[in-house]
Length: 168
Image (cartoon, rainbow, N blue to C red; front, side, top):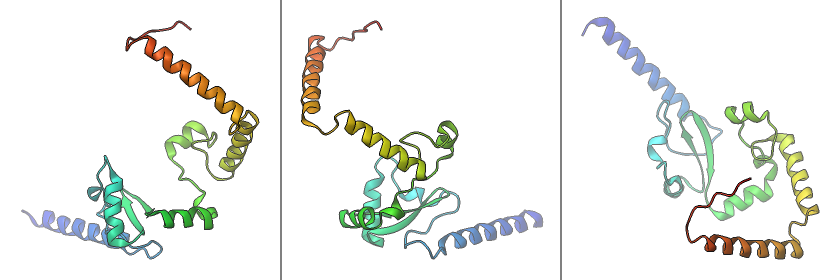
């Protein structure tokens, strides 16, 4: 190897070490596993069932810990009492949703599912009041829904597993 390659390799290693060290020294987050550069702690989390790995991490770091998945750093709450305390006693701090760039472009911050901030609060209030006006949570509507479900199940059974396409 020539001298330029060796020096370039050393500079890259030092740069990665600095980035790694800077990521792990954030004092505003609770304790958690040290992330690797770029991938964070993705290597520690099973993509199919991450909850199992989060439970293992909560035994090591406590019920509130931080983890970095990719370039995104997040705080994980584990356990009924911690989550209840966060959502009831500290609701204002936990009512915001992350702003996903894909959904922000497609929905312009509108809607119920992907809205956030004040817009989300207004949409949620409107949706709940409208559903209540339509009978949500009232006994007569519940009985009608049960009747319709029974009819739907009978219709499914009448086809005996065959696929039937109804014209519109």
